Length: 282
Image 1 (cartoon, helix red, strand yellow):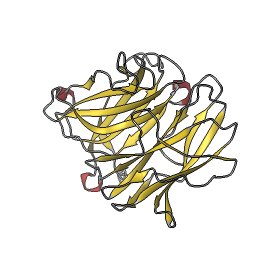
Image 2 (image 1 turned 180 degrees about the vertical axis):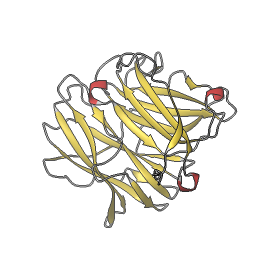
Image 3 (image 1 turned 90 degrees about the vertical axis):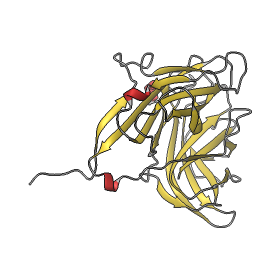
């Protein structure tokens, strides 16, 4: 009897390139040349002719900024007509001093992009004219199309674009701290979650943050992602983050109008000005 996987994608496309090092993989995306916290010129990553199948998964890895201790917001861009008349598909993806050696800042989105669309990216940074490398992988042609769930919209909740930070929270030493004030409120029914961390501290310490994302209101909350990891190996201003929490894939249905909250534990000397941004797929 032939074993059939639950589902698999037989078509994939990436922009990694042939030299598999942090200094070479992916495309260089540069923030605005003269103004901090402002998006720079959009970069085309995949031409429409290369996207030969409908896309159902997008995996992003950011690494190797040109200057340490910098924070970025990235927009994933699409043009369904295959040109460069860009619209924002995912806004303000948080990137904090990503290191290739620490697996970079990783995100995964089950999001639909139709075949023939071009895909691009633009970034802003806490300092003008800084670049970061963006690795993008997309997947299509599922073996079980009937089992695929892919969203059409991603909500970004908690981003403060004027200063390239998220919504502040206070971490607990070794044990989870209290929930912060709400990052914001969902405007759609969302069912899959990602979390980004930004730290406004020029001397980040060797540390690891274990972060919980919850939804509800001030008195009633339920966890929708337990154990998102943000890790910093040393004071060299490098960090990495996993796209998935320790309790598994973050598929959790959250209704329109719910507020989002985070709380965290840290395993070293806490950094100053930690903040979070959440992303809900709808």
